[in-house]
Length: 290
Image 1: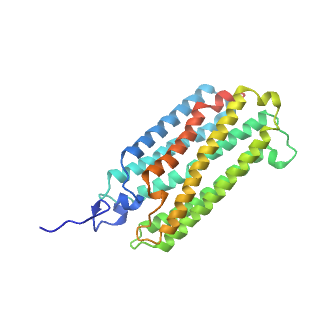
Image 2: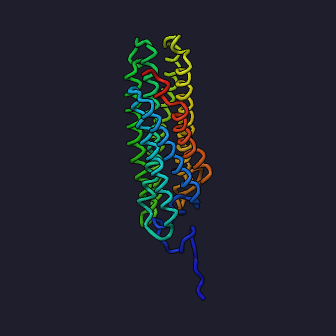
Image 3: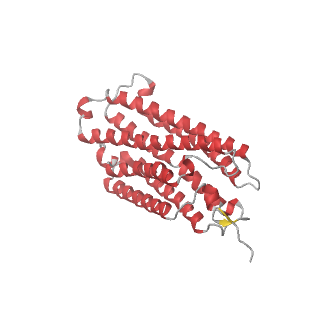
């Protein structure tokens, strides 16, 4: 009887684009992405209900978090699809969709964080002696920087993902894609760091009575907590893609933190989920003036 040979859980001759383990770099289990998608959909629903109940016209921007949470859930739905149809169907489109959505959606959560900070500054009557102190600058400058980093990272992940499923693995193309993503992540981390310093400064300049209100203190606490969760995730992604850019010289293009399921779901999925949950625990619609 002929011996049947397997590689990464599939028959040896199965193309990479049909092999979930080869695409992800590890044997992804169904439980983790299924749990993530459920929690993201639930959190988005809770925030939407809070938004509708609050009826605060100053916080309609929170719909972005609802959409982002559901989009993130969609990304994990695509990941679930790759596990369900491992070795059976062409998984490239689902794999790339999951990678793009999970990588880029957190930028929209960041944009909502910037909008919340801008609202706090407006109601706190912070001085506007310099252009960077103006609420419009806080919102638009950092949102535009988010858009720029989204474009950079989208280009990089597209190049990197295509290299994984080419007829012949192209390590040079994968390396270029990974380094482009790294550049976008560095820009994102720098932008967020500048934002934090600016907010710490502006918090000392807003109206003292207003600043001491429990609602405003809660708003600042939530902004800084969301910032921390997002920054942890960004640093993890930066390290993972730097490691990938080095490991791309190998045949499978794997290696590093990005090829460890526990690290991915703790430092990526959990951090983004917690940043959404903070918006649910400290709903701006109930904390900001109407």
